[in-house]
Length: 218
Ligand code: THU
Image (cartoon, rainbow, N blue to C red; front, side, top):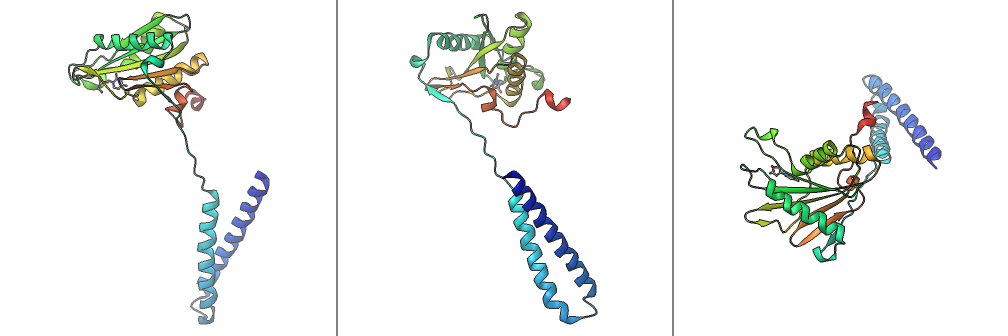
């Protein structure tokens, strides 16, 4: 099917380019003959429509979908609950005097250990770091070569945990991607909100389509 499609597109393009060339010839002849005017307009209209048709036949709409589940805290299994609790607890270690947005994260390692971290801000704003990256970097620094099986995130602001889960920023998603690729396994992502917990089971690809990774550097 692909070959038929490719060759029909090839011939259609060839056809149009011939017409376009002919159009050029007519344009050049224009000053010598007014009789050619009708043919010239016809060719021009035809060429425009054919071109549009071909462009359309090249255009494809690609949709990325994002799958996640919404759980009530009570519905989570024991391990997930522990991880979420650790992320909530970690918000207390957050240093966020500028945003007052205290984020905690907890990572479940392959050996069953739970490592947590929080956002650490700085007066030079970009020097600060999100909870997710603090946690992932610390996890691999303190426990080298331990895959990350799951990561939970919770955020505390204005005296309470957010009702809606806080999704990781783009930079943290990029770091999660590299961790997944490093250990050849998806990270289960749990995003805590008081009204429900989003659970992303398919790995970071669900949250970060069209990824840039090391394969482009080869
Ligand atoms: N922050 C995180 O730690 N994780 C997120 O997923 C979103 C944002 C932090 C960065 C900054 O310290 C504060 O929240 C406000 O953006």
